[in-house]
Image 1: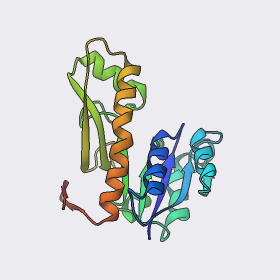
Image 2: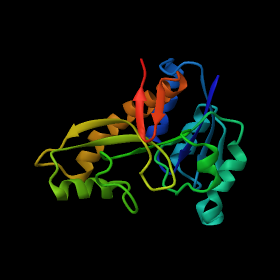
Image 3: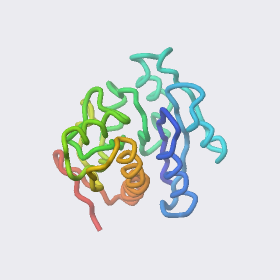
Length: 204
C-alpha cells in the first residue's frame, strides 16, 4: 500500500480531487493516512472527516517556525509521500532532507513565472493578467529548500483571455489542478518518476 499525507490550509478542493481519485481506483493501492491543516476550522478538515480520514491541526500561530519539525515527528517512517494541496506554510529543515523528492506541491502558475515569496492564491492570477500573458496554468513540483523552486514534475496550461478577471482565471486553472495532482500521485505511486539533477523524467 502506497501511503500519503496531505497538507492543507483552506477549502480543500485539491484534497477532494485526491480523495476522489483514490476512491474511484484511478490511484490504485493508495491510502491517505493523514490530512494536516495549519489552522483550525478549515473546510478541508471536514472533507477528510467525511471520508473517515484522520485529520490533525498544527496551528501555525502556535507552532510558527517549528511547524515543519512537528510534521516530521508525525510522519517520519509512516508515509511514502507528502502532498501539499493548497498548503501555505513554508516547509524547511530536516523535513525536506528526510523526505527528499517525496514532498510535492501544486502552484497555480507555470513556474518559474509568478511564483516565489508572497505569490499565492489570487495574487498569482492578478500578476499573470497584469503582465499580459497569453497562457497560464499550474505546476506540480517537488519541494526543496527554496520557495516554488524544486524540480518540475508536470505542468498543465490554460489560455488567458482578454476579458478574464483573476477569479475567472483562477477557476479555469483550478480545474487543471484537480487533474494534475492526482496524476502526479499516481505516477509516483507506480514508480514512474525519475529525477536526474533537477530534470524529472516520466517513465512509461
